[in-house]
Length: 433
Image (cartoon, rainbow, N blue to C red):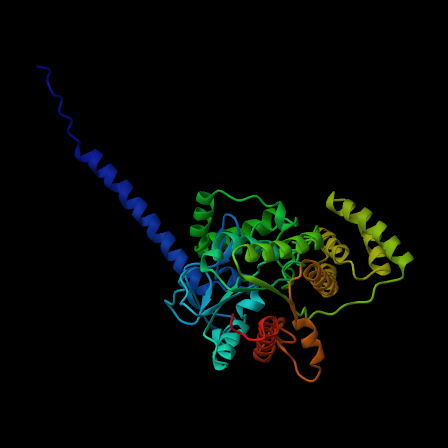
């Protein structure tokens, strides 16, 4: 019978192992202490506050955090397991609707979500109240996701929301489609070009996103290595001057897809032309615009290659001919930064943000025309909230003219809700099916 060798650990070996364990625990305690200290002392900027209520998603890029109970944009916000906004903590939305109840789904971005308004103030909640006051048993689901484009809305409807079996689907997308920035995976390319990510990687990133230490480290590293950051508060890192998130042809296709997806499941689609409350600058004469475009192409190529001394005169000439070229101002700012001219960079980035607002205002009008044209072609009814907002000239219908001219205020949501009620009555001669 072979002998069994008995191995005994010496006190010295045990002490070494214990020391390693103590060292690891001490390091974890230090990291925990740093994490708690950062959460108390590091001030979140506007973007941080938005990201705190979002969660990465492998297909949708992100979604509202599920089962959320927090204060956001000055009001209480609660979500259920899908990230849909609900009235109270713990409230659920059942896939099974009650017999005889009209179930309505409101798709959209942060204006639909009700940014800055309590749940009861959102147009979806107001519509439900109006229907019930009219004697119609109704359930209106707020499917507004912060930052969502029509590309994300189409995927959300197809992958997550058809199980709710809505009778009506209102779709309101425009402001994020014409933007150039995504909260995650922002590379300046259209939404449709992004392939789904590995769910395991996304899950790990979601865990890391909750760490103030990791967040601060990433911010510092991005500033040092990638040239990202802010110039006297100007968020230059969120601008990607390549393409809008959803080009007009993609927007048209997405909205048609939303209508077809809804109709295939027996729901009636209705589009909403949402207001884009941004200024629209006049275009320069055609000859000047053409010359500016040629200079823009040459100047931005030089700037991207690092030849700022050559690029700046070209870019400044382009900006003089057409001050509405936001990417020209952006690259002027980038070159000024490289030259150590902080004040020149600040002025250029200010001009970029101003001209970008003008571009979005112009594109908002264009995309609403695209929406109406697609609706006419496919026989989809639409609600013109943009026109109704323009008709009100004696009152402000958005959150704040200086801080937030994008999201409707309480009266704005009330106007939209009544327009939707009118659309339902027009469609059926009665809100009930």
